[in-house]
Length: 293
Ligand SMILES: Nc1ncnc2c1ncn2[C@@H]1O[C@H](COP(=O)(O)OP(=O)(O)OP(=O)(O)O)[C@@H](O)[C@H]1O
Ligand SMILES: [Mg+2]
Image (cartoon, rainbow, N blue to C red; front, side, top):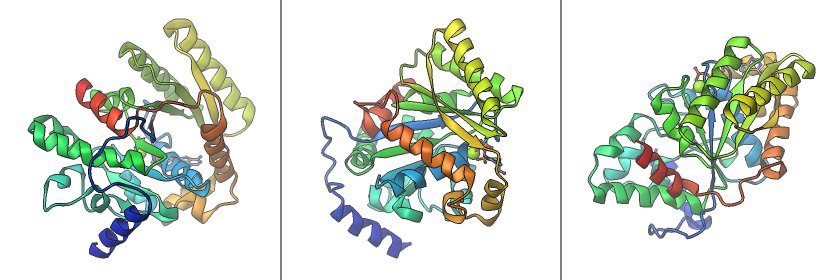
């Protein structure tokens, strides 16, 4: 681990994470929360592989596992994180120490349960942590947050505080209903970030398009919420094989149809509709998160 920490420290020197918590006026990172409503629809695999697709396009990506206690991201990535955000208060650890490096130079952090202790910290400790976390705004182009299942307040915290939200569903009616419930909960919290829809595990495009039309229509009609369609991911056995081998899909099966779909979505995120031009970044995320908490 100390080798890892040293590597990250070296890297930060060369990639402009400053050593003091000076907060830039214009934050750079686009903080994107991935959520679904229903569990098991593919959030974690999508998040990790999207991170790898963005990294292949020369973007710097940090993945935060917000699925409290489940360490899902670690399982999909096949590497483990040692620290959580709270470790920033111990042993003089810096942000560069607590982020673990994964494939293609992406970094990941178990945001985990530690995040909920932030509310109990003194202002000085909290400012220290926020200062450290905000350093990522100078490094990361994207911060992808993988949430747990459900529409609990825990999950909504991460959704409401993000710059952009990706909602994933499969074509199953239960998943669609839960995705709609998430849009409704978000609207109820007066969320303002653009909502983007990904349909996972489609068998053909017609099936995907039907789900998109349905969700967009009811959200607009009953909630007055506009959703952008970001893309589809096909049902693909390679996804299951990748999970079993704990080598992410984009690395183990780069030519697979589902890999291509996720690469297309990465392109959409970079160049598609409603690209967030003025992200609030990690600092903005944290203030909003704490305010909501
Ligand atoms: N496109 C796909 N094709 C085939 N299988 C898939 C696809 N996407 C996901 N899966 C399967 O679904 C399983 C669940 O995926 P994943 O763990 O990413 O879901 P999740 O939404 O993060 O679940 P949770 O809500 O429990 O966190 C995977 O292990 C894989 O077997
Ligand atoms: Mg998951």
